[in-house]
Image (cartoon, one colour):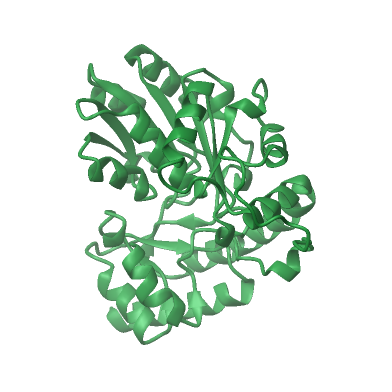
Length: 354
């Protein structure tokens, strides 16, 4: 997927494949960086930033927060710490590739819990129970989902925690899109059980992927393990990125309201467009700014996405880049004019192929 991004995303006119809200420019954020000390920072993140983060996590303290280089580093550290060479883990699929590719790269025993079209891409807890082995140490879920936009209910999350507890495992939940839920948000996993780990990033909801700030909220032993592993990787976060993240979270509600208005406005445009054309079908997303349509006739979307990016200068992500053959990732978090134009070009590409 990253090869596809590097080859095409910077050469297009319309981007309807990105998985977050449209990125901000620094001048739009009203953040003063003049007095930031460009020194090594705290290994677990600046205390002021951790204090802002933990406000949402009832019953947790700053000692339960590890700020990392994006949520990807948190994911890597948790897997590297919890899942040894003789251990087993379960990853919900499809999802952000790092969540399963880290396990593969480390040679870990991995089972995939497949989200199915017939179940609206929601996790099947009975299937999850069947995948558990005596040596299962970690179960990971991503909800709201990237790339399907599906959500997990409070009862389903509670059941997933119980399955992990019964197995003597941890449950890690990537909650990056939680503030972009269309309706009520489920509880934060880390507030529900000592074995639950919450992952989040500033990249998707907040439109600042370039600052590379994410975090994990977990029991102190997990947080200390993240600190130890980071010492061998990134050591600490960018002081500039942490300052920007702290300022955004300090005025969270002020920023979130217009972000959500833009999300809903764009979603209505996408919904009307999907209902008006004949060649695609989808499971309508319940959150976030991504979805995973598929061709009604079936088959690969590689030809469509390649034509779209080369001839129509419009970016999406083919399912083959996400191990989701027959689908493609369509993002609707960008500027409204770009979305409208991108969908128009997608319609022309579909017509040309069909």
